[in-house]
Image (cartoon, helix red, strand yellow):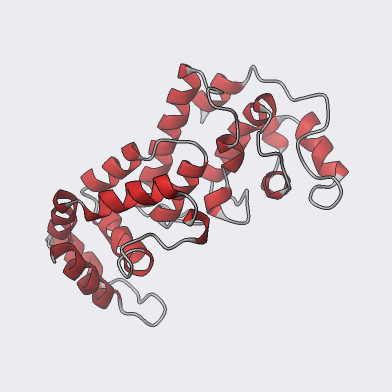
Length: 242
């Protein structure tokens, strides 16, 4: 996070009101705090109101860049900065094309990889379902292919457990990602579907499910709702090997 703060610290807070709705979404007190307080004093509650507010379809870049380090900092600590994880970084995605210079883009991409690695390895975050996190980064304007590559290459059996629980409910029934926030994200849907159905990728995940490390972990997984994990794993394995 130190690198993120250093990269974006030159972007000062705007002196004029933020791009928020002061009528019903954000209080004047919160809006003023977002502009005037040091970043480290801004709380998740402030950014929850800010991100959930009605906003322009094109975002003011300087405003977003000023608040961005604190957004990512709180997100990495497991705080909720939006009512839906998928929309947590939507303001980034609404910035005009070309808003990020090369140094900023590199820092953001490194953050995405590090954060997604925590999700895959089961580090406790407020929402640790990888497909939702992938969608969050896509909506935020990040490239998700490096994250998919990381998942495919991971040898951690926890990441394979995540694959089972995430795809059993939300992909395999229709072979399309079922998430209300992805319904009109056609490029993301196509990319994820191609990745999931690639024969090499399916063989790779099937092989990971046959490892002793995964099978030992699968034996102690709790049910998801009323569905035993081992039944979910069997269903996903059948889909992978058809």
